[in-house]
Image 1: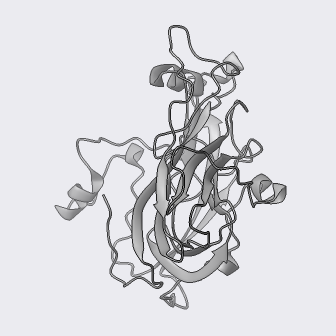
Image 2: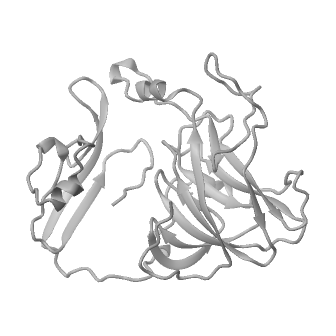
Image 3: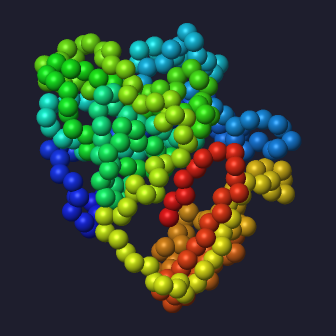
Amino acid sequence: MIIHGPLPDSISYDEDKGPIVLGDWYHSDYFSLVEQTMAPISANQPPPSSDNSLINGKMNYPCANGTTSAGQKCTPNAGLSKFQFQSGKKYRLRLINTSAEAIIKFSIDNHNMTVFANDFVQIQPYPTNVVTLGVGQRSDVVVEASGQSGDLVWMRSNISTICSLNSGVSPGGMAVIYYENANTTALPTSSPSYTTDQISFCGNDALSKTTPYKSIDPPSQAATTEELWINLSPNATGFNVWTFGGSTFRADYNDPVLLEAKLGKTVFPEIWNVHNYGANNSIRMVVYNNFTGGAHPMHM
């Protein structure tokens, strides 16, 4: 599903390739992963590492070198996602990192991209050869097909083993871009155009690069200022839980807050961690991340 914002696109292109879904992949089943992730501190058990990196749900895996759970089948050469480019055309790619844990470094060999939107918000376009996407982050880019007829190149979705938990067997997801008249039964021999430093850096691009396309001047003084801390700490049962502003998040998914607020409800159980700012027309939030174990984006 694609949701279109209120502003026209700030950059022109010839074709929209739609969502490009990037993400980590685990060979263990969901319940085993949750059990390992939520293990009490006393178990001294590290969180699980991903086994593979996928582009639009596909990527080969070196079965002989990797590991699979008991009873699992491993299919080598399971298949790659494929895209068609035409020389000289400009393509919009809607990049989405749907990983459970991994920071993704997206690139296309020998091609530059122009980033013009992050997380639904349009920004002043800027060029790059690598797009960094944290868990849940989205970026819209335009890539110009600068190759020649008959070319084929790799599209890459790299999990940085410095920034994220990966077994190291298959951290690099790949897809194939075929230009017109290319041999669609062949595989590319192109080399990555990123540097080691780019793959090793765990943060997003500098804020100086991500200027809003339509700026909004904040009020000179916010009506309310609140300081919030992000922490990972054990609860009473010894399990590690995330807290935001000193509270975990416990909601009733059958009774959504947004619906209740629309119906006029203003008082909620404390465990829901709902902050009521009344009629304030502006709120200044100062967020401190006290967790130093890994990089992670903050979403509003």
